[in-house]
Length: 371
Ligand SMILES: [Fe+2]
Image (cartoon, rainbow, N blue to C red; front, top):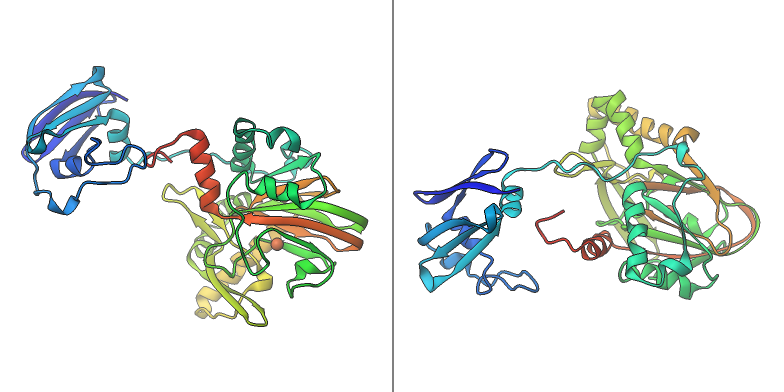
């Protein structure tokens, strides 16, 4: 994007961009967002300027288009401050650019097509790790091969994103069918499709499941793309979709001395209307009551969600063997496990959503105004 024209009018600067769109930026806003090193720390991009001492219309010496239209440069009277704003920055701030979703919706067509990465390759460098993050963003799950069957490998993979989240289950955890916690994960019974942590205020971002040992039958993992389910309901029943976005469903987790509670809509969109988060776990749902009219629509919508995630056309299924792991976006992919016999030992852990995003932004070199 380039700037074609800039003109100071009263207490704002009017800009015409190369696509002929026009925007007005107040002098106060421009001074508050000044890029000079006395106003903002160039390393952390933290604001050093005291916004609250600025006059309502800071005075300028002059303003001009520089760098062949790539920048607007403003010379302020007070303290001889010079601000340089890139055309891209100003354009992005003004126009609510509807970012296209970066995700690809899937159903059973993903069977045998889940991106798989060689553990030894991706663990080596940040560069090799970028395609892993890209694939998680696109599909919501990836698998790994050739992992050592020990928890050091689990830990090193989780720490590629950030620190491991501590929960009531610990940080880096391992579980077998030994019933160490009251959660059904610690048994050999089947567990239906769900997202984890509906009972927390901030459900875990990514979840890693790493198979350390398995000697038995069954224990298949199923996954469904929550965004695909949301899209399907949005198209077939807008009223049902709306109520799944509106109603916050309470949930709880209880064991001696612990009582966690959360409340989330089944479907959440971002400001651009793209899918952002799915929260669904009927096992952990707490009692709540709606008006009869709302309740009727809610149960219909909630039931349709449950029906679709259990439709084989919306699922992929595989059996984790020792040396293999699956890493999935818990804000998107629903997971399940069929019952099994014998002994099954898994390790894993959560990373927070914000740390997963942080890693993506860092590796891609994006600044705070780029999403
Ligand atoms: Fe789970």
